[in-house]
Image (cartoon, rainbow, N blue to C red; front, side, top):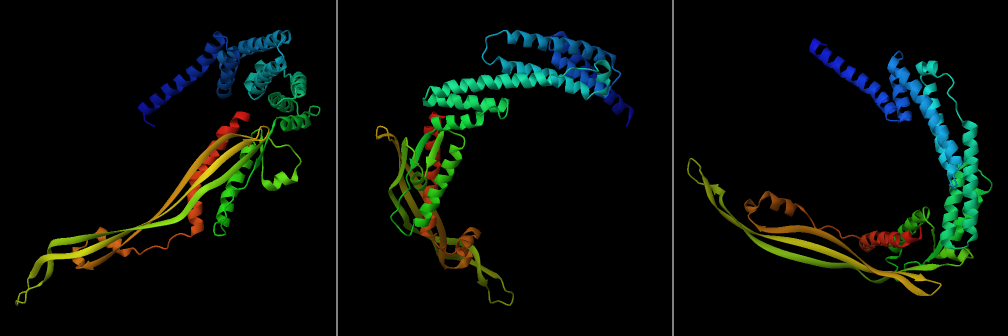
Length: 381
């Protein structure tokens, strides 16, 4: 390494070290004691003998510990229903500081016995879970859907805070079923054997989406088969029917173009010294454009079974267009361009099967359907 690069490296290293060290002191001066401690720990890991970092660590930790303990004492005196969750955060901060110090040998020489409040943290979690559980019980006793949702979230929080707390998991399940909207989904009917499998594919995609949606929602969708196997009162029915669909409307457009090219070599002279003969060549290029269009219109309807009224209805159109092109030519091939030759190399393609065309136009309908279902049922979550 040359002297100039070495000096640059030393300057950069010095700036980095000074910045790291000063950042700890600055945080200490501004009252951000936790940040000051972590900055000092990082500094001491790379330079265990750094005196200013040692000083920052000692002062910062004492201040940080006192502040967290004071906060815990103050929070305990409040009427905040969820005060134990705030106390958990304070104990977590203290324990994180102790763990960070334990990972730094130089820090342990200054603070060899940083306390960890493991038992206190466990007690706080228990009390916090108890508060959440009791809140859930009160919400669930109200016996309305919105309260059941609140009950579910409180039981869920209790389980997270203190796993296996009483019967929080079972109560969470009870709250879910008290809050859930039950929707019977009617099968999309297509009166054609040709499109039976394609329609089943479309229906299976819908069912798969609905199952994925309900995993993270308070809505449960039942297929006709599932609805027959359960004894529950359904809240809504989701109806899907094709108002109309047309598969395979075929249009062929034929375009004839006169082609002319001048100054083309068309032969040679018969003299002893042969010379090229140039002239004009012509031909007729026919281009065929084939379009197969398939369209459908799905009626999407949600009926409230309590009132037997339609509460949402939309028409969802879908279109799929399959295209093909090829060409034919009569005349002198010298008149053709490379693009013309590429066209003539093509042959008429075999058209897709009707079943594939059916799947094609249901694609955009499925996309619309997912969006509408998500938008409508998000209001229940």
